[in-house]
Amino acid sequence: MRNLHKYLSIALAGLLLASCSGERNIYSGEEYVMFADTLKTYPVMNDVEWFSVPVVSTVTRDYDRTFGVEIIDSESNATETLHYTLRSNTVTIKAGETRADVMVHGIYDNIGPADSLGFTLSLVMPESLVMPGMGRKARVVLMKSCPFEIEGFTGWCVLSSTFLQTYNPTRSYQRLVRTEKHPQKDNTIICRNWMKEGYDVEIVFSTDDPMSPLVTVPEDQVMSDEGSFFGMAHGDDRILVKTSPLAESFFYPCGNYLYLWTQMYVRNLTEEIGTVGNFYTVMEWVSDEEAARLAREGMEM
Image (cartoon, rainbow, N blue to C red):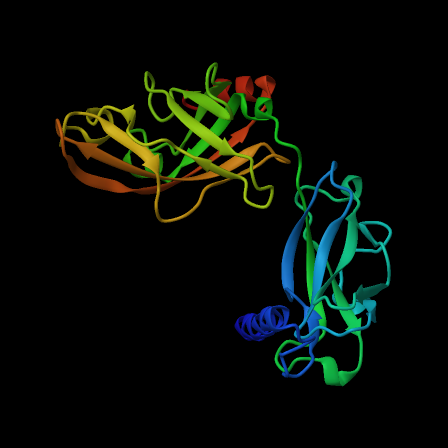
């Protein structure tokens, strides 16, 4: 991709000079045509009909350029007409332009939440147009992206945490947690008795990018007293929690579960004393019936 960006930057600079000087084409480099990304994951959503797989050229021409688009079945585990369709088996870069789009329709109802499906496209064109090191192929990965409904993250969930595994006196790393929609804050849930009874924690869902469904924990929330987990107070007897800076945390609307990286830390009256550590937590929502069964079997609440 670094080579592609270099060539495209040169081409775009040439086009800019041409527009300023009135000349058709200042850029005199080689003509190459390729997919903008050789590997990319695309969301398949029930309310979006098509997504674009871009094809780019390093130069403009004063005529249309049409290329075939071939599906390489031997390098694909997604099936055309079952999991996806192409709008056309050709792509045309218009005169004076450097980009065109292969339009793909992902068939939402035929893709499962946990499916790992993809297909390989190849441009049918002369070998002289193939950029060395880039090739003519692109791998398209399909990811089902369900609509976000915060209600799917309310009710009972099973919480599994490396913090509990490390510090819980009972050495149980799981507990049942009840969550509810925040009455005033958008896309926010309240986790009642999150790691310790009597201490609630808020989690915020980011829904702006379907390819990056992130969750965060606002900082300085009190998740427990120190004595319950450490046996003594090292600061002001509060264990605080926030989103860990080490890794992003994700939620999965198709499956109603999330992976959360958090940092636990303690303070004295005004200053942070130290970080307890960064811990990994999984929260998976279950039915009331399943929660009742787990409670009868002794899971902590």
